[in-house]
Each structure stands twice: as C-alpha cells, then as structure tokens.
Image 1 (tube, rainbow, N blue to C red):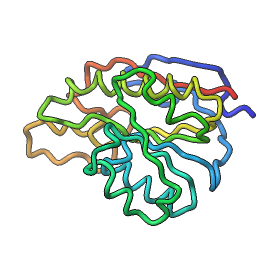
Image 2: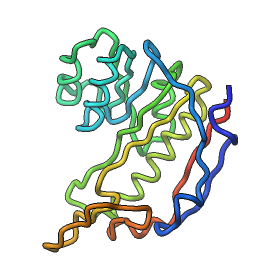
Image 3: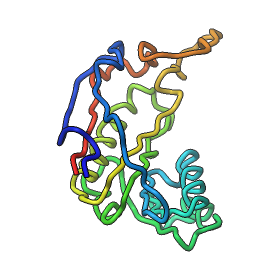
Length: 195
C-alpha cells in the first residue's frame, strides 16, 4: 500500500518559504489499535502524554528513552494504565541506527524526542534536532513495517525563548514566523515513505 507518493524526497526550504512549496501526502491510512506504535522521547513531557493516550486507546507502545535502566526515565510510564502493552527500548538522537531494533515490527512512530535547552542557546541545539530527526527517519526508512510517521514540535520553533523582551508574541502564527535563535537552519528534510 502506498502511504506517500514518492520513495524519498528531500526538499530545501528557508524559514520564509511558503507551506505551499512543500508537497505532502494527500491521505494516510489509519493505524488502528492494537497496532504497535513507537514513541521517541517517551519519558519527556509530550512523549509521556502521547504514550498515555496511545495505551488508553488500546495500542501497543514501544517507549524509546535514552536510558532504559533509569527509573527516572521509566517509572512514571510503568505506572500508566495499560502498561501490559508497554515495552522500553533505548535510542539516542545522535547515534545513527540506535532506533533500528526498537522500530522493527512497528506500524507507526511518533517522534517526540528532542534536546532541550540545557543552558545552551537555541541555535546550538538546532544541529542535534536536525541530525537527530534525520537519524530517526533513516531508521524508519530501514523498517519495512512502518506506515505512519508523526513529528511533534514545540512553540520554541516560532517563539524565541532566548529573546530578552517584554514583547508579547502575536496571537496567531504562520509559516513566515520562526524563532530568531533558529536562523542558522536554512533547510529542512522531509521523508516520504513508499510502501
């Protein structure tokens, strides 16, 4: 079944580029419970809520964290209802191939993993975000069973959290908005999977 129209497409786009210049798949088939869904960054704020909701809806979840032996990374997930359908796997954004084993046999992936501020400027984090997402996408490409890829983001992509200002952000945002701390990124990669 074709999920996306082309095998692999990488397009460059500046932050000011219009969304209309990018091609997205018109439809994607549903991945229904009891399908197996991998969640990168499952121990983080967004990832743990995604994991909780997937379990609530009856999915089998592979929680991918940076350290499966760390109770700080796994205890709150182990306590979730439906945890009998939850397994833990290790992966690292900057380690190519580290997601391969966890994705084997999965039907979908929700990519929530990201480096957070760690006292560094946003621009310093950007290479890890780009390389990390490329590593996850490379693992997805090697996994023949994945039919859907979901990428999460945060308001930090459009609100410059490092700007020292009392200025209130505008109430609505568009493709033209981006955080000034992210300006070193002049391109983005979009992976289309052909199955």
